[in-house]
Every structure is written in structure tokens, then in C-alpha cells.
Image 1 (cartoon, rainbow, N blue to C red):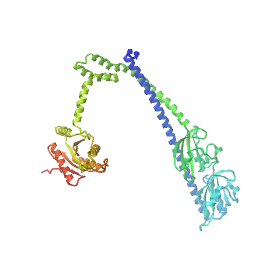
Image 2: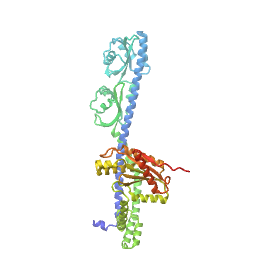
Image 3: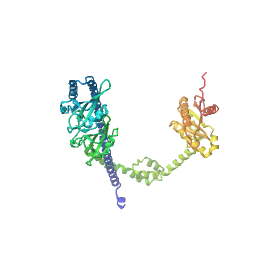
Image 4: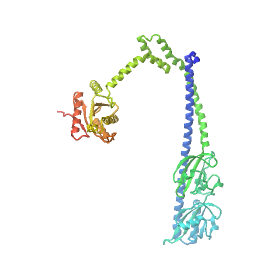
Length: 524
């Protein structure tokens, strides 16, 4: 502490400024790093979700197209049954037309292969007993089979369509096989998405078996430890950060393929995403360095300027009893806490007087229960409008059957009702309007520079707000309102309030819970 007392003020200012700047720069850098890191993670998750969804949609479209193509072929086969030449031609066409299928077979109702593509010619005449053909024969409907091992040790999916004679007799099925370990259109859609940064996609069936994966050796194996697969097979799309079976944190997006009941997962290692973050923060640091050096230079320059108010205050301290000192102190620009405190020490007494006088004036003009303006404030408002010739509209209102509220629930509840009504008045009126409590349950809203039509709209809006409002303990209440404008309805400002009161009385007489607007005087 002794060192600080003996220290030069300018030195203390510079040290304080340097420390503040350093803390601000470090805080900004840390906050920026956190925000940038989270933004990269969120963008990667969103990107992977969109990519998985796109692949799922593309695969869904391919499978639907394959089913439609087989259904069309089945219809033509039924019309040419059992012409061997046509059956062979049709299976060859389906196999070679667009390479959607690795092989095509045509079976009769007993499972005997009547025709097949060239790469499955050895199946001709055989009875297929693998799961896909058996499922097609059993269900006799267009279907995409569960993945299974064929008799030739291929992991495949059979897409088939039943063949029915025009009389309804089941003739067999036409099926296209997709070998999951070989090239075809589906493998191009799903299997070729590996990137150098470790990003890749994989596909699982509803038994969580891998159908497509960068590691071909894993195809057909089941994955039960990945919590993301339950989400991917649940029928929706989304994104989530997970730790895979190798302990690597991955940012994954997932989607569902309804036609096959498969799930698609697109993922990228979190480290690959955050590697870009490190380079980005280095760039931010380098780009901010010139600005920070400039700021430090400005701090040295400002030190002299900051010490100037204290020098002026110290010089005036000897003459604080002089009346002119107050004026000189008021002109001093206090730039920081100490200087500002010293300046206020000179002005404290006078400022307190002004504050107390202002508070007394405020108390005199404010209703203590509702916080609204009172009659005394109304007098000054009307006087000002009269002097400045500012036209205004007035809305007088009171609560219907308020005496019943006080008699039934007591005056304490009645006071709560008045406070709630005051709140509704403030909410409905404009910022420049004056809400006034005249006494009891009688209120007034004075709207400067407001036409009669707008005032009537505001009054109606307030009436509806009150009608909808559930008052504490009491429940529903209504109000009646009267509207008039100055100088349209009277030459005197006080006379306008009387006209508004007459309209309020007319609203009461007319059944309450309504707005009555003073009619405009007729022009002779």
C-alpha cells in the first residue's frame, strides 16, 4: 500500500489500463475460441445430417424405381407366360439395361428358376432355398428382402415382384439381386463416400448389420454397441456426437430409408473438424495483434489525459468555498471513478437538494396506490397543453359496480383491483399518454396529439382488455368509458373533461361495459 501511495498517478493509470486491456483481450480470445469451436461442431453435425438425409432420399428413390421396374416386367411376363425365349430375354434385359441388379432370376410358383441372367446361369433349373427367394414365394407381393448369404456366398438383397396370371393365378416372381460387396448402382450411391480426413458413411439394416462400410471385411457383421443406430432406425433424421467402437469421437448425422428399413449414418471425426479450429484461432490472433498494439500505444497517450481531471480537481480544492468553484467543477470532464467521486464531493450537497425537491414534486403529483398521475399532475398537464396549443383527447373511465367489490371482498381487494386496472391502462395507452387517477375508481387517460377516432379505438381496446382480464380474487369486471377531444368539443380544456364525464355517464346509463364518444358539434 505504501508503494501505491508514493506512486505517480500516471503510472498507476497506465498499469491499470494495461491490465484491463490484457484481461479483455484474453477474455475475448477465449470466448471467441469457444464460440468458433461450437460453431464448427454444429455446422459439421448439420452437414452430416443433411448428407445422410440426401443419401437416404436417393436410395429410397432407387429402390422404389427398382420395384416399379420389376412390377412392369412382371406384368409383361404374365402376358407371355410361359414362352421360354421371352422369359430369357426379359431377365437379360433387366440385368443389362442399367446395371441396377447384379443378377436377375425368374422363378415359378414352386421356386424353380425358369430363367436367369448370364452371371447366374448356374441357377437355371434349380430350386432356390435361400431366405430371399423363400420370402418372395411366401409373401407373394413386391418386397425388398432382408440381407442374406446366397448359395454362392454373396451378401445380397433380393428385390422382387410377384407374377400373377390375368385370372389371378400366382405364377412365380421376377427378382433382381443386389450384391452388397460388389459394384452396382446402389454401391455407387452408398459405398463411395470415404474421405482423407476420416469422414465416411455406413448403412445398417433393421438388425443392425453393416450393409455398406469402408471396411469391406465388416460387411454383414452386427453392431450392437452404437447408440446412434437406434436413432437411425427409428424412422427420423438427426445428428449427434458419439464415441464409436474404436473410442473415436465422431460427429454423426443419420437418416432412415423406409423402403428397406435401413439406416444411413454419415460421420466425421471430431478431431478433423477441430483441426480447422486451431488454424482459425491462430489467424484470429495474428489479425488482432496490430489492433492490440495500437490499443497499448493509445493507453500511453491517454494516461496524461486521464490524469488531467484530477489535476484540475486538486487545484480547485483550495477554493471550494467560492461560488464560482461549483461552476468550474461542473465543467471538469471526469473520465474515471476517482475523478468522478471527487467531482461529486463538490456537488453532493446541491445535487441532494435538487434530488429531494424533485422527489417531493413527484410525490405531490403521483397517486400513492396506483403510481399513476393525480389531479395535481393533471392541472399542470392541461396548463401545458393550453400554453403550447397541443390538441388532445381524453378518456374517462371507472369500474362498473366497484362498490359491490369493496362490499363483498373488502377494501384491500378493491385496492388490488385498482392497481391491476392501472397496469392495464399503462399497457394499452401510448408512451406519450398520461394515465391519471382522479379518485376512487375514477380514472382518466389524456392523449396529447391524438385524434378522437384513435382515442376511441384505444378506449375500446382497453375495455376489451379489462373484460378479458381475470382480476385477483374478484374475477371478471367491466369498465365504462367516455371519450372527448379538445378543442373539437369545447374551447376550454376543463370543459372537455366534463364532456368526457358526460359520455361516461351515458355509457353507464346505456348498460355499462361500453365506450361512448362525444359527437362532433354541428357546423352551421
